[in-house]
View 1 (cartoon, rainbow, N blue to C red):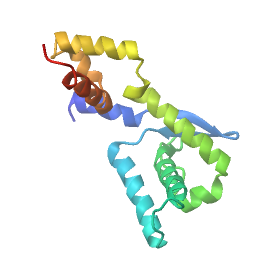
View 2: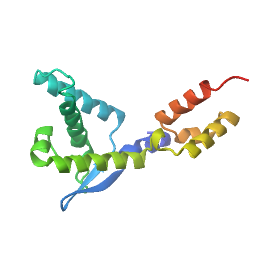
View 3: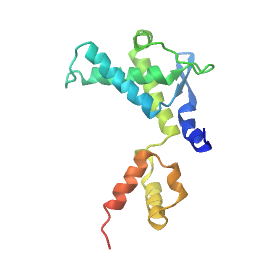
View 4: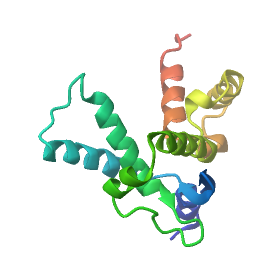
Amino acid sequence: MSDLLERLKAGTDAVSDVYVGDVRLGIRVLSESERESAQLAAAAYFKGLEVELSATTVEAFEAEVASQVLLRALVDIETRKPVFVSCAVLKQTLSAESKHDLLNAYVLHERNISPRAGMMPDDEFVSLLETVKKTPQTPRLLNCNGVTLRRLIVSLVSQPSI
């Protein structure tokens, strides 16, 4: 695999420590494919239960997506193998509070590994925008995620022409 692909893949390989009580686990960031798989698994779970997604079931659906994300993100810190074999085992093992704490830990770890544009301070974004205006080929763009790039495009396109 090329060096560039290895560097890109490193984001999903980074594992952070997280605790459930005194039990130490690892948590890793999901790739786009894994996140999509988690969402599709939640949809399939609801379809299997013959539950329609509606205003009254959306919270349960989001909870199932969260379980599917954690199923894929939680790993044994030593072996890097998944902790849970299924969402059913995850839900039977974790309390609602522990699941909530783990989901927050996942979001924090994801932000640390690949910060989203919304997390970028405005002054830093304005600096990047000014750099792109002056030097569109700037190497700074190589470190931007898709959300930041979309934000740059919208900012550039919405500016009045001179």
